[in-house]
Image (cartoon, rainbow, N blue to C red; front, top):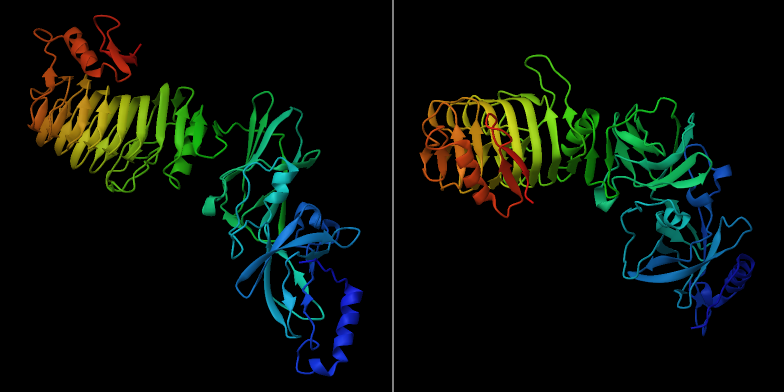
Length: 531
């Protein structure tokens, strides 16, 4: 089909000619005519310089770079080519090699959008690029739509509006070189990125297209990293709502740059944490998304709190195997000191309340854990994997399933140990309060008391299955309070020594990535990575 383009003057003349024909008095085109291709005029993207207050014009408000749009009529979608029709490219003519045709003079209803992916039958949801640093990716993140518009024969004009919001950041007051600028803490609804690398418009101005959303006060919204390693984080001072079609500009002084204590991966799923502020920031973020990973790169001391208060909020505090924390918490050989949780009426209490993912290679020193049911130093309820985790301090529950490492285990606990007191009412153990069809391998408890009223054991209070290579050296004579009695041995210092225990635990752990070692005759075994 040959393309026919009708300009405004030609279209007007044609319209007047048709009006003089008696055949079209009923709204029909002239008798014998093949029909006239529908040629649209596209408007609505005003230049930023003339944009009204409260509006914005992304990508300079012009049609440059837009190659084609989807046009929907009567359930059919066709691609129309875009040709800017003014010197400033603020309006365009839309034509097609296979156009729709006028069949009469009646008004028609049209929906159009860009970008267009073949096969789409309706405008898509807003989904922007995570990396908008290149102009092409910035421009391609926009979504413009002319929805359900009435188009008349004499004025086939489509007015497009933006489905995205535009956020612009102007940075001031800094001398160090900028290594990166990111917008963070963003909504991930409809698959949108949690953070965006914006487009540098020049100088200290950065801009990005964002899915419309609300941002809560206190959200770490702008993160700037300097070439010297210093990091600045700007937190929203007030709640904000970013609406479609509007621009929001933030002027941010970097004079008082603060270190947030963490970095976030490009996909927003992994926090790399190196101080207490960073760990607490992850703790806050993971309450909203229990898939967020955390890797420590330094030992961390949490801030001290008054008696009866907490410096940590467990994630996954409902006893729900279908809604646990499913990420990976990797201590990477580092220690968290001073973890304090005082939630005496709360179920599922520990560093992680309910685990369906993995926690590994982590030491908790001087922990003070107080909860109700399912209370453990590292994990309250485990449906996932725990490996290479150690706890010193006190773990207390006022009801059942309380353990120095884990309160209730239906997953795997490998190469973990606790030193310190563990107390509760029933199903109380030095390592695990209750082991129900889970595996406990190469674990021990020592240097503390384990106490309760029923089902109390040096290693576990109750176990439905046997354990492998586990030891205890505490105030109790039973390693397993109730249930299966196999797999737990007491270190009495005579027939069984810690040297004996280390050999047996290492045999049980062979090939699992961890081994114990005795550094001297007076210390307890410690873990090291298997060579």
